[in-house]
Image (spheres, rainbow, N blue to C red):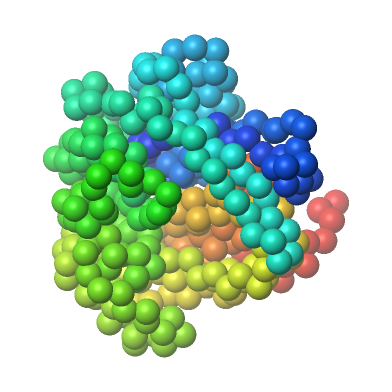
Length: 344
């Protein structure tokens, strides 16, 4: 199938992000900058940058703030025609960007958001999945509420019945999961339909209710063994991706990537980023890059993981949740030494 024939549907929450400018602390800020983003939307926006057709499915309030969200989604060339307008509020999060040895800090304000109040039967999956080839969701959505988890499962089953490839970023957030359920009570049922998984070994084991393993990621045989265990528990999974991060400090990151498919492990060369402009959304940039890599480089999986890692690295240099790098920029970086000379 050609790249232009692919259509990716993503489902999840989009949030308003409020952050002080210029690395100020919350206590110093007299105003906050507004951006819109969220894990699943960020993936759709990345894919749209690379020329893939996308539709983002969510629920947002039917008010002026919701209108701003729609405008932001469409500005990234992501489809918004199936978005549900309901509820009273958009979920928010407040971000204090770290610098050097000071970590970033996030405060969530997303209870009773529109997406957390969705119910089974509100989305017409027959229409939404028409001509679609890939459905992407993340572990954030079922963490919001029982009804959000129910609708997520409804969407996953509908995608599976229609033969879509199902992609999942485990995306565990300890500050969510406040409605009385733990991941191990919800995620195994949802994950059994997944084909592509973005996860480190310990997060996958945690969400499946298993003991942590803490594998040695420098040893290929150890990683293959642990990924095989995950695939035994989730037999529909045929591809596992993972970012490899070494945080020197908030302003200095070292990023690599792994891809496991057909019993082969592919590693992307580690890249250094200093200074980091914005770390938020970098995992989503990897996920979007990985999905594109599996489409565009399906016969060269080493390039697929290199593209995903390059996209992730570039996102560290871009402010906001969304990766705004074009496909050619990612390819140029992937094929360069990272010296970032002026493009004349």
